[in-house]
Length: 139
Image (cartoon, rainbow, N blue to C red):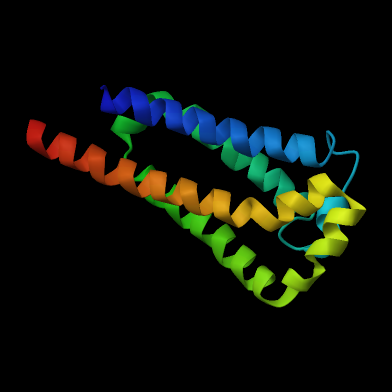
């Protein structure tokens, strides 16, 4: 098992998840139903930033061993979205049936994006410590 290769592929997958989920949920930026219930985080600027983060994961994937502290930035970004999602869910979970009925794709995305981001935050934490442990043994 090659640690760097697994982290690289994880970053690529995370980038693709970010990019494709936004493009699919917004139907290539022609439908902003996802923005209706959480307009600040899931408004057009927030969705564009999710795409940009996705591209950042793709760009750094093959060079992460040279900048492992970037994973700390990625952890912070994912935890920000988890925090926003948890706060939103706490006060708006009762809207779930309405959201799913109006637009299954947008409603479903709104209900689960925080769980997805939490899983990626754990991946980034694991990757950070694994890379640092691996390199501390080399030097």
